[in-house]
Image (cartoon, rainbow over all chains, first blue to last red; front, side, top):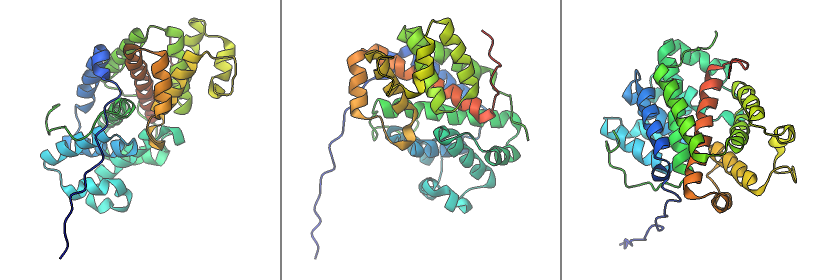
Length: 165
Length: 147
């Protein structure tokens, strides 16, 4: 018989800075930008994009928030888990979703060099022009939230689905 | 296939509002340009570099600083402690994919900037990262900016 022991988790860290309180106009502009960038995009696709970018940028707070929102919106656990290896699990996603994820990776990792033509062209096959521009904007916006979340060490785990919607 | 020039008008306005709020809160236009140019170098944004090198000169940023910005860590005597702290934070917040914002980078910035300035400095780095993504993603060529 095995005895189950409860081993405590590491203690929770404190955030570095409550940036929104110190820069309320910046926060207001971020909310406005977020609202503007999600218009015309499928909300399910949007959550996949947000989770994927947050994985690349290692934003714990954003992963907590967007995986909870995705689940609440009816997304499957499998599709959320597989995002970390989506190129190897394309069969979990539609061609259109895969094209969006590919563009998400490219637009998120700019420091390794540009957005390849084949990635852009592939996305352009699945998204009409205005929708594609919104997709780029949405990828940009989650990158923005990721930067606030990571630099200020916003604490993951306390978000409740729908809290910020 | 050519890339799109489309950018939703409200997205554009919100991006501008964010940049303006961050810059205003930081209250140091010359430093803001150094930050914005350094992030644009890391993200390889030709449009943003062209635009902000022009603005930096209008704000009186020296040619020496602009020339050596890409190697600011090695450029002894060219950037003061405050500028160096801001540039280190800019790099850390821009290159998130290689891992977090180190404690020592944060601590050095927090010595030079109060909480309000720090929040706006991060906001500014976020704002230029936004423009970098929107411009590089759509491959907008340099030279289009008119003051």
